[in-house]
Image 1 (cartoon, one colour):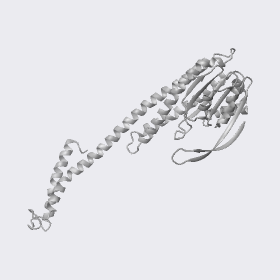
Image 2 (image 1 turned 30 degrees about the vertical axis):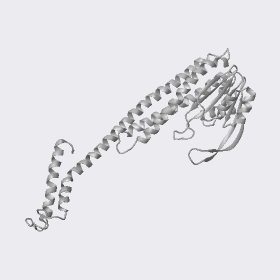
Image 3 (image 1 turned 90 degrees about the vertical axis):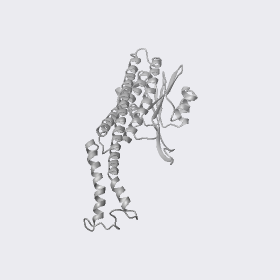
Image 4 (image 1 turned 120 degrees about the vertical axis):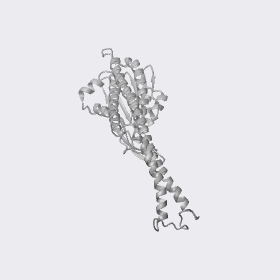
Length: 339
């Protein structure tokens, strides 16, 4: 196992960030073939393997490109494909997904990734350290097709855990979507974005898995059981994830519409209250406007109204404002506009 530490300059936003990344090459020797795992490799590392195993230079370019679309290229002696998997943390913005590149031949298997796929890293370490001899014997002493199935299987199983987390987040949103004191619009938007990203990843994964299933037989031994049955099981798991994503997307649309309707209803209630308050204040505004003018009006100061004492004019203005407002209030209440 070869380890190095390199410093890379990332650009997640406008401000560049320096990050120290572990560069590691692990070679697991088996009874039939070697498994070479490259974590955070440089182009030179991939080119050395390409020269040894005669990889296509375009595939080498795809390996060192972090954001390459999923694909599968089949050759006479090996196949090459790229898969995407969701990042470990849902709030992670850079990168948007983890990329795995795999070269598979009858006498070698090479995996290239950025070290963000914990199930794969754990599997590599388990075989390299021989912590589970029985498992290593089962994977490394048969064929590259068996090991390839195990790699894809553990990563797809990890997708099931991601789906459980999404379903748990859906349950949390359901608990607060009807609570008017809490805003869930941002949570809904973030979860919708994550579900859409997963749908794109899993749809491409299913397409690649179907292609692998058609080509895997040439990398298995005759005495082995039919590997297509095992890959059919992996495809079934991918279908389950897709079904769960479709259901989650439909649920998110319901929550989005519900939150929109409840927010609109709340806004309408606030506007209705403000409108009623403004309407009830119209008489006072009109009367106060007239009697605030510097002109002679009936009952004004110039007339000297003293019928109800020295504050007769003030009392007259209050009554002239309150009586129409009270009549409107009673009418609005009768119509049910005021609860």
